[in-house]
Length: 50
Image (cartoon, rainbow, N blue to C red):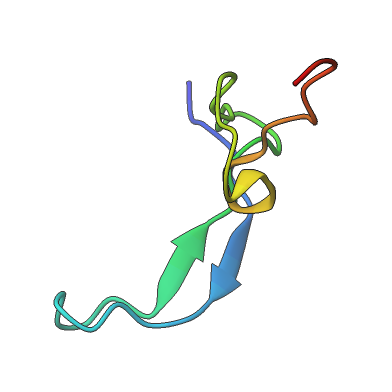
């Protein structure tokens, strides 16, 4: 019924009151599969070929 997500600290400057980020690719929050740059922030695996 409820989703489980992993939270890390860190504020967002343009959103008042928001002091956390959801970690992508962990538990129920999916990563972004075709992400090439900044992969660690979005839970994307390293591509096999260039």
